[in-house]
Image (spheres, rainbow, N blue to C red):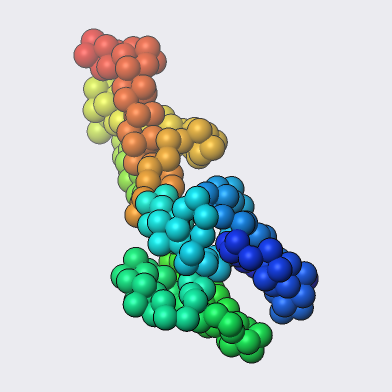
Length: 250
């Protein structure tokens, strides 16, 4: 089954019919056709083909003008120019606009197949590189997310565990009990537990965390901002104010 779509823009109806129904179909491609430059540009924007075969001499909009418009609209798929005899100079000009290759008319099926394979293979490799890059960035994003969350949780666990161990030591030695010191230790431990809870709330709301853009294309979870925002809410909460005021009274 065809997996790649080729848009052919040419005012020769017989050629379009041959390419669409016979040649390209037999080679395993889906073919879409346009009879002039304006229609070709519109179809390129709508169907987003994998490759465009573009005739140089077209009604309503020349092939060169279509090529410039494609680049202006960031349609960067491979373009193969189809040129008549004696048009090599114009084809060279097209290369400066990023055209992949050109086919002098008349061309053979074998020449067409070779050119298509070469152009699409380049596009396939580019897509594979992009997918690999995105996979690597996504993996790094996951690693950074886990590292950030582990940092917050481990730090607060250290404070909470340390506070509980100190309280345990004080309780085991009645003569060394310092009520104010114990209340302060417990307050710090309680705050650490609340911050761990805040981090867990961020985890529960990951789908609502604001996304940041990386390399203009990849969106990552902004964990740092989400955690800090949760900590700010925690600092302003009534329970935290009561703990603070209680510590001041003691």
